[in-house]
Image 1 (tube, rainbow, N blue to C red):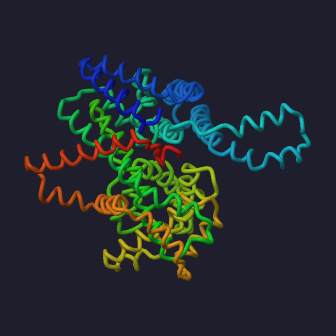
Image 2: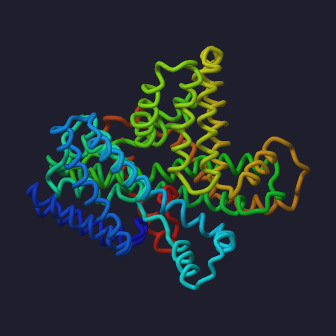
Image 3: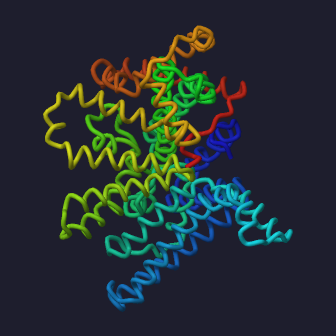
Length: 490
């Protein structure tokens, strides 16, 4: 089910919220949320549902067995460690299979057939089936949630969940299912064990949901009208001015797209009395690459820190040279981040790109960077972040270099292309860009806190604007808005 479809927005969501309020009693509400969440996942297809259900059973019983072995044999026993490693490998392998194997077979099937000299119809049919596999919706986010659960049980940070209903809620809860946030079981379990809502929560939750929807449909939908056709051009048609303008707009677009989904997920969860973790904190105000990763996709960046970077640093702490192994820990962490994001070499290079930047910033040039003024550090961070987003949009490393070349080397004036570009600059696009800048750089928040906070008329003004934007969003959806969220593909 497309979360931007009229069916989801005007049938599924109202039905869920109204019936949830009507049921009142917490345990009944939890069962209802579980039922509609399972139904939501089932709507994406039977194969998707069966896979998620299988992963759920595997981790539910596997972790119960892991906790049993820890209590009976200790954590350091061979059997306990073997089960722990097996659970990690199985979850990781499922994700890697769906993310990488179909693409590998699609690009290399002629070579494989020639190398193994197998031309039987059954072998070719098997290859064709594997090529048609697609990454199940939400699998990347679910896998990292499951891995954090396994790690926390193994380290005895939390007890294993014996209640299958609570565990199933952790897996299937539909507001976070498609693109997170990546919840930890410890915090999420506290929310679902004490479900309670209020009319204030319902109002604030729906308000935030409407805000996220408006960001996606009105602002991101408008910006993509420029960025999509320009990125689709042949690399030879990119030039200095257009490449910078286009990349700036795409930088705003990708942030607001993901932030919009997070707003919708967090807001909808709040209407059910469940608090999800915040995922963004104005990342484009960061004063360093390290600061950027403390503000961007917080549920992922803290996951990488807690379950990859810190354990690696702990493991390497006594090894010499210390700088080398600290750098290696950062590079491995962001290499894994790249693999998690996508199944092409571009995403792996994107992860390495950030790993190199962080090593340079935190180890090599730390003293020099600390002496720079804040305004300079903000600009330098933003430019490097912009360059990083090129990996997300182009199809190959060659195209990345071509785009970077267009940004760095002024090109000859192309009047025909400029005319075609400025046709896009209609009032709708200019207004969307203005709003995107004001949201991304915290200008709206500053105005609200300075002039409208704790004032009745201020709340009325803000609520009126959000209502109007929500109505405009509905109108655009009914007129044929068909975009999906970018991070749903990861």
